[in-house]
Length: 86
Image: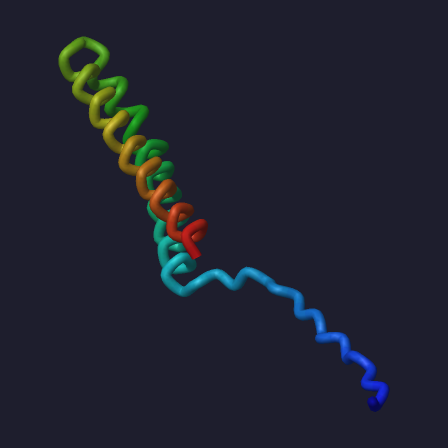
């Protein structure tokens, strides 16, 4: 019987390559986050000053701020959920 030496299989490094869908969502999430921050910076202070006399307007602005924060959090959650599924 011939002496056959075993050949070791080459080892390949597996690197996670982000998909194009994840990269698109990531860029969109970053852009929307910066736009929201810029909008709050430029519009937030004057709106707070204007609403200083009305508790109802201040409550409405707080609800809008919470809605914006929730939608931003959901967008980031969905972005990273897609990355983890691949």
